[in-house]
Length: 231
Ligand SMILES: O=C([C@H](O)CO)[C@H](O)[C@H](O)COP(=O)(O)O
Image 1: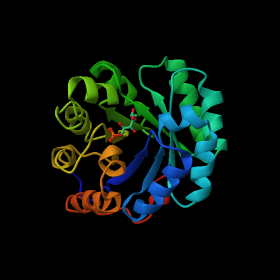
Image 2: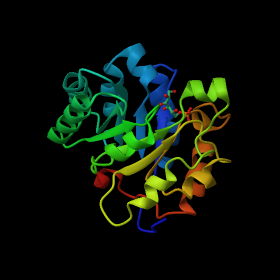
Image 3: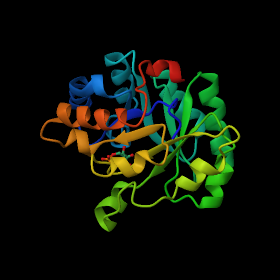
């Protein structure tokens, strides 16, 4: 891993109310860089969840995990108008959707995170042309609950991370059941963003859990002191 590369912690907030999400984020904000308004919040409470999160945390990067699959311009405009800094699209979506997400994000000086759920290795290589995007290797909630899978159990993004060392590549994010135990393996694979939900939000002491995750990451990389500067 390059020692220059900051590793950001993205707090994923799912399956709670907007107010619970804001309260949780306030507890742990000093240990996280990016705050994700989870898909479940957007589905349950709408784009208002993104708006309220940005109002509560104007200086944090807010990720709207909208998981767009179609209607890209409309959905991404909703996210960025509500204050999101990053919005997500599924990598399995048609190229037209990906293009429109990238264009819309750039127009708002925002960033696109491409979720690689159910995306083939060939398609991942194809998506690497979006060098200003973040590619998110994701073990889904259902794969976790139904198959017992967790991020970091395979090296499926390692080849990607190392094979393009000589030219610009997208940043890499990793998500899906990440815990303190699985973190060391994941960190060896050079991610830029570590996405953690349940290991913090379901912990008996979320603040302590977030601090431990941050401390373990700090052993591998220089901490990101100004997350806004990374956009
Ligand atoms: O995107 C997510 C998932 O699809 C919805 O729960 C989560 O943000 C992501 O999986 C991180 O959450 P944990 O798996 O609970 O760490």
